[in-house]
Length: 252
Ligand code: NAD
Image (cartoon, rainbow, N blue to C red; front, top):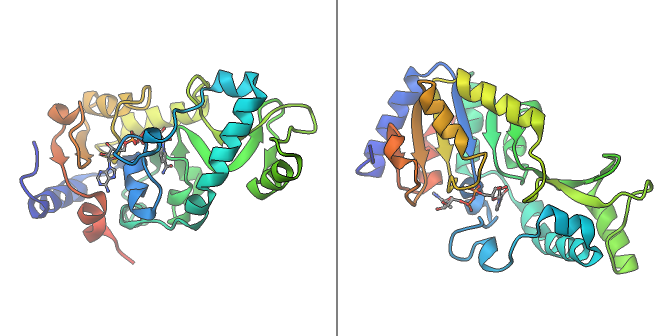
């Protein structure tokens, strides 16, 4: 059911939250737009500027690796200075209150961790762009080191083992992280309220989670200022700004 206005949406959401024993928030890029990080699909979103670089292109082309890192460095000012928004703070409040056992995110910006959710309770389906990994030996690298090497040599550095160094994100064509997928499934099956927040719900397999929650008997809430293809299934649909909707749920 689509909430007719913001006030009604907040009242209904509060009733669902009060009734719930275990809430699983599932977040997408929309929760971070107010933090200055553009999403992919909105007007002005990242894809209106650049097509994504698939995993096999990264692994087979030095030119693509350089291009991927150039794009990442362009984004660094936004990622490095972004602070959690009202949505992040509200979810961290519900986590502190014991309502949210863990959160599932498609985001790669680290803002849920910064908002106060323990890193072990942030299940990242698409990885994290604030550090890098060797694709062979999984050695971790920090971004300032990669950047300094890139700028000195004019191209992306490789690991000491010869492997390619890539942000710790999951690219198109790259395998989903098995442990994170399993944990997200378990949380989805065990929750009684599932909050899909700021995701266009078109990227699979991540988009399957709201459906799974609903089929397992959880109440489903979708918060997105645009319609999604799962709106019909949801118990509450809120077509408003995420920060405005979740602001009343922030506690100190
Ligand atoms: P998406 O760009 O496909 O969708 C974002 C959705 O949020 C859109 O439907 C848009 O209408 C909505 N939205 C944006 N701002 C909003 C606001 N203030 N209030 C209400 N709704 C708002 O993003 P997605 O579904 O997360 O999907 C795809 C991929 O994008 C993910 O893999 C994620 O890794 C990646 N991504 C992440 C970030 C980030 O970490 N912040 C940024 C860009 C892309």
